[in-house]
Amino acid sequence: MHQILLIDDEPYVVDDLSISLPWTEMGFEQVHKAYSGYEALELLQRYPIDIVVTDINMPEISGIELIASIRSRWKHIRVVMLTGYAEFEYARKAIEEQASAYLLKPIANDQLIAVIGKLQEELRGEWETWSSFQRTMQTFREHLPLLRDRLLGELLQGRKMSRPQLHERLSQFDLPFSTSLPVCLVIVRPEEFFRRQDMGSMLLFEYAIINIAQELFQDRFHIWSSKDVHDYLVFLLQPREDIEPRLNLADDITQAAYQLQNHVSTLIGGGLSVVTTGWGGFPDQVYTLYQSGISAIRQHIGSETGIYLDATDNSSFNPVEILQPLYEPPLFFHLFEANNWQGIEVKLNAIASELARNPDHSLEHIHEARLHLETAFYYFAHKNKKMLGEIVGNPLMKQAPFQTADKLREWALEMVTLLKEHFESERRDSRTVLIRNVHEYIDRNMHYVSLQAIADHVQMHPVYLSKMYKLETGKRISDYISQVKMEKAAYLLIHTPLKIYEVSAELGYSNAHYFIKLFKEYTGMTPHEFRDRAL
Image (tube, rainbow, N blue to C red):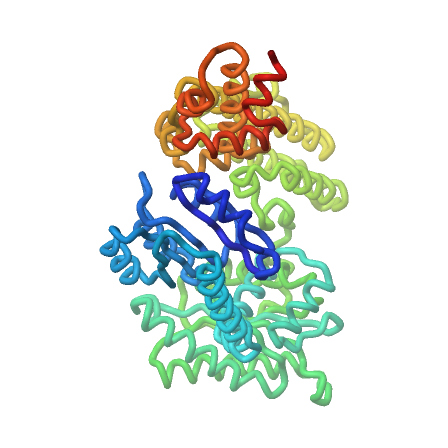
C-alpha cells in the first residue's frame, strides 16, 4: 500500500480530488491534503509519502521550488505536476527538475489514474530492487568492520547489555565468542612514528597492524579488535574451542606480542608498546581488564617506548576500586542534555547501590560522586542560562558532606526533581505563550491567514511551529483555522444580514461553493439551513 499527497492553494481542488478517485482500490492506504508548499513539506517530514500531486503555480513556494526540495531530501518520491496551457514553460522546468510526470488542466480522472498507476509500478519495482537480500547483505558486509569495532568499544567503556542482546549482536556480526569462556586483552600503543602520520596514512598503518596481529594470534585464539578513545588498538582474545587446551596460553600470548612488535618495526618502521592483561569472564569483566591495562600503561610505561608489559597481576597497580557506574555511559551530562529524567534516576540508583554493596568504597567515593553530580547540575543550569542557586536554593547546595550512600541519593534526587520541575514549567509556560500568540494572530487575520504568515509573526520555522502546535494542542494549525472560521461564519449568519457569498469573502474563501461545502461538513447543515433554523 502507498501514501499520496495532494497539493493546491485552491482548497476545493484538493478536496475534490481526495473524494473523486477510488484511492483505496488504487492501492493507497492514506491520502494527505495540503493547501500550501509549507504545509506539504510538513506532511512530507511526518509521513512516508510515495507520490505527490501538486499544482505548479502556487504562492510562497511554487511547485517548481517544492519539487526541487523534494528531490534534495526524498529522492524516492514520485511527483506529478499539474499545469494550465499558459504555463508550458513551467512544465518544461518541472521536467528539468525531474518531475515524474505533468498533466494539463482540466484533468480527466482516468488520465490521472493511469499516470499514478504507472508510478506505482515504478515504485514497486524499485522497492523490490532495494529490498533484495543480496543488496542488503552487501551493504551490511561493507559496514561490518565498523559495527564490530563499535560493539567492542562499548564493552570496553563498560556499557551493559543483556545476555540475549549480546548473543544476538555477536551472531549478527559473525563473532565466534562465547560467554562461557574467559578472555584477555592485548592493548597496543603506537609510538612516535605513527603519531607523526596524517589520518589517511594512519588508517592504512592501523589496518596493517591489525592484519599482522590476526596472523599471529588466530591459530590459537578468536581475535576481535577495536580502536579505543586513546587511539590505542585493543585486541580481545578468547581460546579457540576447536584447539586442544594447553596450560601455557600466557606464553603463547607473550611470544605473539613480541613478534607483533618485531614485525611492525621491520615491515613498517614504527614502534609499539604492548600490554597484555590477565583473564576474566566475558563480557562482565572486559571493562575491568581494560582499565587494568590502561592503568598499567599509565603507571609503568609512561613516555617510554617499545615496551612489552604483562599486566596479569595488576592488583598492586590499582588498589583503590573505581566507582564504575558513575563513569559508565551514558554519562550524567548526556542524560541531562537529552532531558532523560528517568535515565538520570536509574543511574543515581545504580551508583547508590554500588556504594552500599561494595565495602571497599570509602567516604571519598561518596564525595567523588557528589562532586561529579554537582558539576553536572551546574552545567545543565548554566547551559540553560540559569543560576543553579536560583533553582534549588542555597540550603541544598551547602549540605554538609554525606556519610552514607542513601543520604547522597536522597540529596541528588531532590536536586534532580527541582531541576526537572523548573525547566518543564518554563517550557510549558513558553509554549502556552506561543499558542496564545498564534490564536490571537489568527483571530485578527481571519480573512487571509497562512502557516508562513503565522510563523513569520512568531519568528519560528513553519515546520517547527506546526510540530510545537500539534504537540501542545493535539491538532493541526489548519484544523484550528477551519474551526474559528466556521464559528465566525455561524455568528455572521445569525447576527448580520450578509449574504452567503459575502460571509465567504469575509472569511477569506474565494469560492462560495467550497465555503458551503466546508460549513456543511462542520455543522451538518448548509449556511441557508443554519440561518433559517436560527431565525
